[in-house]
Length: 271
Image (cartoon, rainbow, N blue to C red):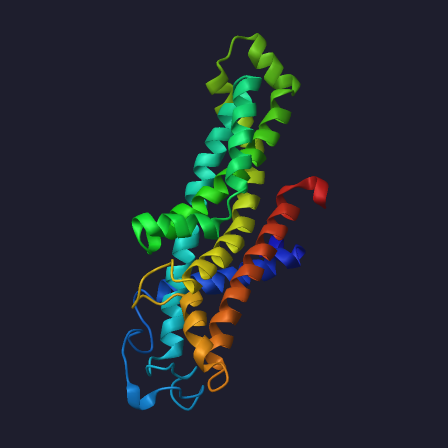
């Protein structure tokens, strides 16, 4: 806690993201009402009149849907970033340990992936695989691969020029051992910071995919689809759009602050 107190940005990000994660985990065992429970007689009730946050057009409890949506949105983003970070980091390390040709090929592949937005990738995948969590994870994770590949390659190339690495090469150490013992530990902080920053982008992208109907399929609630469903009732029941929009915004801000705070904590040059 003393460390967090010295870094207010890190503290703010940790509080926001921690609250969201706890809410998401809590939704697995408890919500005020079943998120999919329909009660037409209580439809479009404002906050505090029916439940804490009101009801939607089907009479479903908004607080319960937001809690369940937190788990669906966050878990999809976490899985996508984990997949992208793992594959991208491995490719970056391999390219740094290999020759210039491998580095050039990797960069050109990254350029091709960057040229295709994740939304468009999800639309193409959805045509073949159908909408769902798997489609969203593949689309977001594929876009994350070049982000981490470039970051890892840039950091690893700097480490490969350090005197202790050159000494290890002179002693006949293998490229794999040098990568695991010397390179990866020295760039792990950069990867961790980038993971937290990309989580915010992944949550925002997942909300966009769900808004277009390419995320999780009903009745599983997600923040993006709640926004899409609220379009028709924006004038009559604005809380239907404000609540999931605020939750998405809070998640993006929280992970961005957490990433900035971790960078300040882990990178002495940024202090």
